[in-house]
Image 1 (cartoon, rainbow, N blue to C red):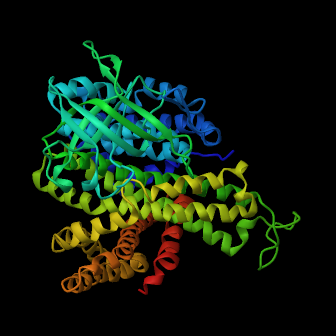
Image 2 (tube, rainbow, N blue to C red):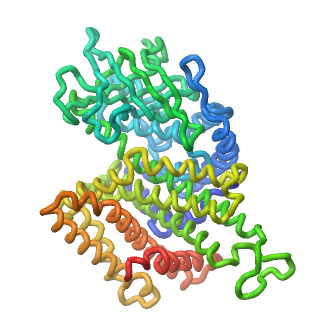
Image 3 (cartoon, rainbow, N blue to C red):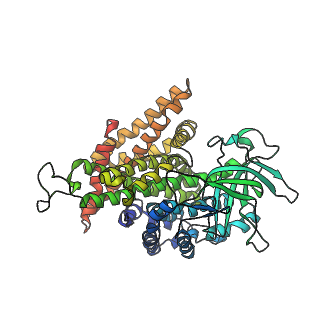
Length: 577
């Protein structure tokens, strides 16, 4: 069975040293509750829960899968008990508003916990993960009555949530949906239609499931402007707010799929189901985007978690597996052969995984700070800037981290050789689970169009300039520091080239709009590589400073510099700077 140790030292480096989370938390209203002692306890206990409770269920859940029995879905053995422990520990409410029973801690803390969950049991983590998005949508757009009915239950975790968008004939083009919502005499709506690919659409982990469903009213305008959002509970709440009568929504079938077998991916049939309008009529897409944007960050974290899991196990195997001798002579002469970690190509694969894991973690935690500021900040200008950066970085987090996540898990199989192809080692499961992350919550192509088309070109490059100015200021401040020249000089060139590349595509798009679609994925991947280059330069600066003052952990900081060098010399060198 694969092993996992939460990378707490690296997490604390990024949070406490590189991004100065203690000061960040102190500036947030209520942030004093996220004291270093509290944060440390949460990280330690979250790591224990992930390793001891979730990890042992990952392979067994993959092999067993979910079962549809009598119209109800059963999750794999152990999943329900693990979820009960999760709820009892108060984990679902960690970052939720105290008004609805939450603990009110910063969202970034919940995102760190999410990485650990994704590393140990991605399929299980999707059950509570979707509930956070549903709660956000209701918090922002629901009525007071809907908040009273659903939010507390979702926050405490006794109920879970889903998002029901896709239909058999349409995925991204939601304007084509056929699900209908007909007003009823009691002020509710009868929802009829079929949704597919619904993650956690039905299960036995929680008392009730609240489906957020996109549908069209009888008089709705054509296309995406005619979409409304409805809350459709599996069980209709009774007068006491507890699950009552079964609603007309059932799982028609479970998808037979490549990975994430432990999560129920359902075809959901709505047969005159009782639903309740969330937000204004025909404004459902805007409401759902509240949920989708959070989900996209969450999927990026899934990519990060799988990279870390694959790297840790590949590294352990490479240290133990004996094959051949090093090209420069025996490194373990007392053994029949050297461990494969001495071979340059194995080190290349491991360092690629390490760089994407550490760089991805920096990207997620940098973005998490923006989420904290947007949600809890008090300075209007700072919130506006954070919101702009969050809009720019969200498609990068989602698409870049899932693309390199799939690459990194494949490298993990390669390190194992033929054993990586065998189920018992668990490496092939990581590849299968990683594959879906490039697809759901908007494919890489959709994220790329969002980044280049909507976020960059439609703003005349202004959103991009907010970020590239930050990189430029960093380069200016460090340009005379000889110890950082190996990072700052190429970063400055990359940053300049990013602006020039954007201008070139924008000019071509003025005469041929297809240029945006043709260039968008390459543009997004370029943006991801430059973003990580900036963050690695900042990490190198911090590592240099600590080493200059002396430390008992010199090996950790030298390794951070070595990883940054590898990233620059081997992963972004192809750009030609």
